[in-house]
Image (cartoon, rainbow, N blue to C red; front, side, top):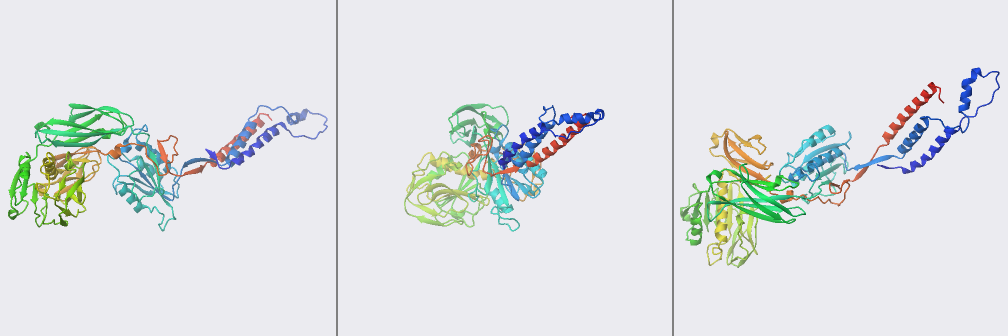
Length: 637
């Protein structure tokens, strides 16, 4: 508390005057009377008003001094400092992403954020309104429309819960721009009448279009003592082919070394295998497990868990579905014999190969994957396709011949197709210049053009090799053992996953999952059991359902007409959410009692509380009046 008019304390000089008045008594005129028997009370009163009489015990003096103190304090205008920034209309955005479940502040960060939100709500009056949003995907992020009803606002804040996904900040603040003009140019409001307050533990994801001065920030976070699973993949070993390989990527975000166990379990049963890991601060490690191909594992959920005590538990667990060995029907359309390609395809235990001439091609048929060698059919079939050196052009983009030698300079090392593959330094004598479509993702970059790229268009998965990979006169790709067979096998695996009824069955929380329904005419009801065991009905617009609300970490089960169709797993696997480092505000300011626990760039305002002093002064007057009359009643001066 501080005082806006401290000069008022000079009025405290009147306190000695009040005390002096209790010493000084009234002087009365002397009168001679024949008898004083009838004037005893007057005599007592006269004695009581003798100047500089010794003070008697009385509550009047301390009450009068206290009254004067209260009055002077009120005139000094006492005020409390609190966060300001609330305008005629305010939009309060509260981060509900996975990292807000961290427990470094005693409770979860979201609980602390709710308490901060309630403080802001308490500043509202009848002339101000507020909207509550969270960071989930619009339009579901609007929790309470503009209102001045503080009870509704508090209830909306109380109903917020952590969502196991990264925040969609660009979409959220696009939504903010729709509901409130952050520049204050709305005709119905004065400039600057709309304010935005964002409570979060991470402001790094704010879109560039957001002005940090316009968005007032309240930051939460005390430390980053956390270790997380940031990668999980399940593949089949090429040799021997009867083994699963499970790769667990672990990263430490802590400032101290961490020693812990990585444990494996099957379908919720006890963990049967573990490996010890020691991680220095801010380092990563990869842990590889090998499992026998056991039919008892087919369709089961394998879970990796970190046996570690840290501030965020949701990223200590990751799950995947184990599948039986796939069998893909692969059609190779080529007018030439390429022994390296034939050898790779025929030795792949998961491929049933069929080879035809381009003149004999009449459609996809019942094949799962199509490989077109120097050939692109018109129209393009729906399905999963590999184009090898499409010199005749592609129906969805332009292609030009390039006669100049090129060299690989970069590759998409994190994509599943490029796992354990290195083509850096690969030289190609001739290639194709391909204009990458919007949906294209480059896998291998050269000093001129993308050499290998892929993407999804409508219901098709497509991979393009913009050179002749199996002509040894053009490049040494086919001789790059083991990169060539590994890359081809992983291309087929990426394409073949599209043949599953649920794809993909391993996603990051927040990513969509496609569900393919066969015999759509027989489908009456499709339901989904969430990781928390709640059941949701899914709308069936056609033979494909796209489920986007993978907001819970865990295993989902799809039912068609009451029968299980399949399962998929959603995991956090997000280093940005697992990094619990305290946020840095735009102005690097802090206004909290505990630095790091609560930071804010909101301006502080003064809330005057002199009204309480006035009320207290009135109460003291009432008490003084009562004490005075009580004294008179019992004959006390």
